[in-house]
Length: 83
Image 1: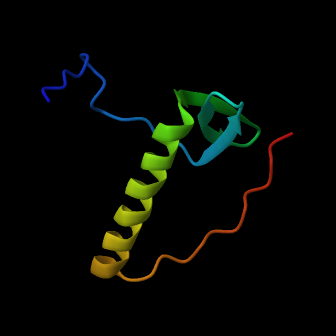
Image 2: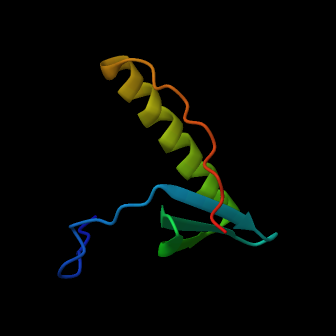
């Protein structure tokens, strides 16, 4: 598949927090850059439940590959929510 990237989109965006919500029809993933005293929504992805299941599988496999190469990832503590 030939995927085209819009001009300026390959630089990426930094997010240090993610919020997930869902309805029966879709999952909503909000990626947030959170620095006191506030935060900013960086990107929102909306996907079907079936696609979310595939995403979970790919993420799990890639974390396993990373840990095989670089060692175990220590789980981070949950961040405090911004007020």
